[in-house]
Length: 160
Ligand code: THU
Image (cartoon, rainbow, N blue to C red):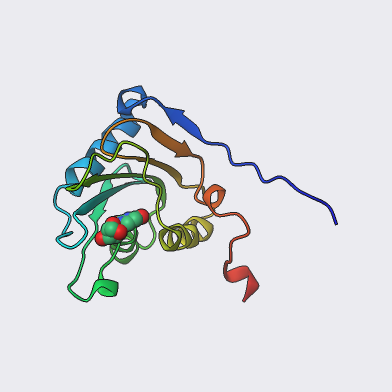
């Protein structure tokens, strides 16, 4: 037996103003689209914005449903919008933010496990990393260089 360490390099920014102009602009698109989330049950509105290889931006937000499991997260709405409309365009970055009607979200909101898995598939298929950054309503922004870095020991189609 041997013990191994798995390193994940993450960059932590004090707030959105510390980001580059490109990243800040993308995060602002996520903030804007979060407002349009359909989240009447959780009161937790999430926005996701993708920067595509041609510098266009594709956004998505969470869409809930009275049958709770039929709802969908912002990240998957956004990546599926991109994948279904522009299957050959690569994704360079994704920015995620959240706002709650119950309390101030003051720490970075990482994507759920299912969204990480879904995003990973696109990252692998395009053979280029997708940078990911996420924040709460206020405060710090966390950024990593790839989706894979958020999902160690992941499953992918190379096993099939
Ligand atoms: N949600 C997202 O949109 N993305 C995540 O990564 C975490 C959770 C949504 C799903 C649901 O509509 C609400 O937030 C509360 O879980």
